[in-house]
Length: 298
Image (cartoon, rainbow, N blue to C red; front, side):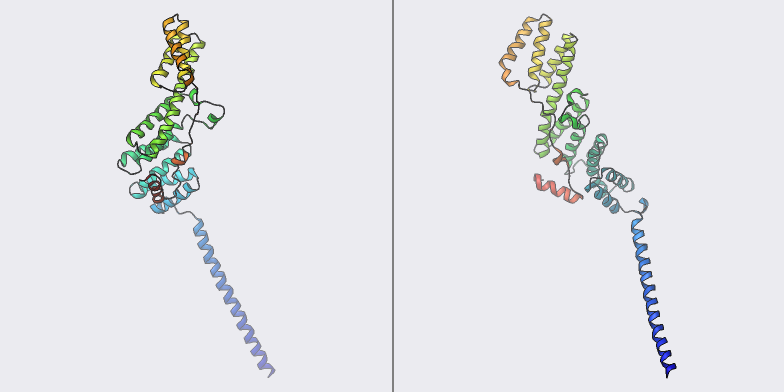
């Protein structure tokens, strides 16, 4: 009887041990499978194995979090592996904006002009023209312009190009919000470029090159009428004419200056905050397009 009881206890104990062993084995297998899955998820899929949707998802995720360098890389890969189709078309403007924010305006302009060439009837062309102008406009700008520096002291080639881009936008799409913003920026650029001419004229005055100073001052009046620097340009004309002994020209310049003196109050705003309109602020193209339709009645 004691022997039978011992055998019974042993069988019970053996079953319990087997049950625990089986559970442990199942748990270990489960952990192993989960671990493999987790590791697999952590390992980045090779580019050649990615679908176009996966490239676009990676790009727009980086775009939404303002990781511009990553977004640029992913958009460029998408275009390289899948140069045709809806995703490639969708990527042009977002890539251009990423380049713009990453302080590579020339790359942004390149993408935008390629977009204009490939899709001449696209509904987002007004935005493309606007962003191209902003990109060109940003080349000679600095955050210090709001405090101690003056963009007018720099080379005007980029400002001239931006000015032309803004004018083209206004002529092509005059009834858009982009055209209205471009008009505001044109006023600032006109003053900036006029101020540059005045600075050059003053440079010539300091070296007693009066004829050269006159030519620069006259450019302000002829090319940038009603600019904020008009009064200063007329004063330079009067002073230079006086030094050259051209008294009649001097008196005419002084008369114009005296009659309009109250209007010659210089306003030297160097920039407008137009970043909100430039920023698509969307991760995916559909919401991007719908956003503009809602805002601008497109």
